[in-house]
Length: 423
Image (cartoon, rainbow, N blue to C red):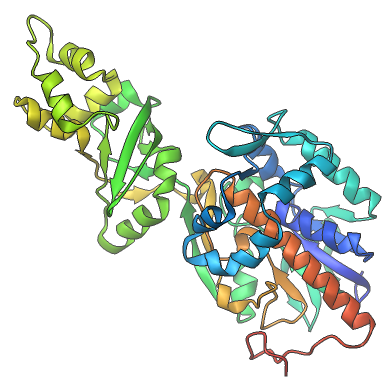
């Protein structure tokens, strides 16, 4: 598959959820599709996510769901509205995968695994004659439509009529997405925001005793407040800091604060279901011969890790109301973001002003960018996978329309210096 003219209809680079969805839509429209994947097998990160149950999407109203994408919501909205949660659930059903809505509103496959869904999906793609070629690493562009790869047999140029880049972010690099695509895209003149950890933990300088005794301890039914925003959830103490779903909700704001000023100082409410006055009244109960830790455990219902956290913040106040205030607003000092190798997802990527409404590169007509390669982020809860599938589907359908226009000799020609404006 090399040469100067288009030798097949479409190449999708990356066999993750966004890439496989783009391939499915292109093939469903009757076009020949090859998916190139640098790993030996497809969708490794999807399989890893499935170990935690595979959160497919969220059942909340679509307007609320879109808010989770923050500043990128307006650009992602057409794709997400075209493939809302109900449609995603129906798509799973079409693969023979039943789903259920959990108590938190999150949507999961009933088997709580990714492998049955992936196997069914790959069977569908095979029935559509989609070819998946493993161990091909994308190295950049060649000419107006050529794609250069390194493979088992050396360098190879594939020249499709359209291409979809779905190479993921840079989190969990051992699973395939290492962010190496930023170099060839930057060299090609595409604007790329630096990749950074999203949905990641943060470093806290614990005392040696606390780190040794409480690393791995959960903090359940707590609340975090930062920059005027408060949310409830759960977190986990680690040897190097703190992570977990509650922390991920604030990941973007905490990361940006550290970038600006070298640290972030949220507060943790260890008893969000109890008002300060009520808590102070409980703490004022006679202690008798009980130790202070036992008194806190009995009157405030605090587990050992929470009590130790209070001590990490300094000497405990003797006054019940001051102590209640410490419990309700325990200061944390976050000094760094955990690295990309430990992050669930990635912030940064191809700037959204580099693609048109169909996610096609303005610099390179016929090349689309989808999924985590784009500069957006969202918390965990189904929002990550949903947007990857939605953008892959949206771009795949747009690429199919372009192929149909090419076949009819009426595809728009774009000036490479424009931003999606027909020349």
